[in-house]
Amino acid sequence: MKFNNQKNTLFVDLNGELDHHNAQKIREKIDSHINENGYKNISLNLQGLNFMDSSGIGLIMGRYKLVNELGGTVFLTNVNPRVAKILDMSGIHKLVDVYDSEEEVLQHL
Image (spheres, rainbow, N blue to C red):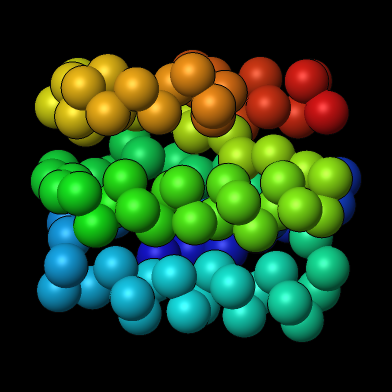
């Protein structure tokens, strides 16, 4: 997992699996960055994910709730087809904007 920031937005590159084994640790790291630096938005790059279960959906929704209360939003980028199928089934795209790249997120901001 890598972190970067631009335009008051925390960019997070996620890799490997996002499941019940590691979702809490990832959530804590992301929340720590938000609380320490006051980021308004989060962009999650899902290109490196090869698996995500309902814990991953919960992580995204929890971060959505957190930044929404701060007046911000969550963006998802580089969603691979396997993860896209899970996101589509969850209906999360109705709440979270999905972009092809981080550059598109920066243009949106």
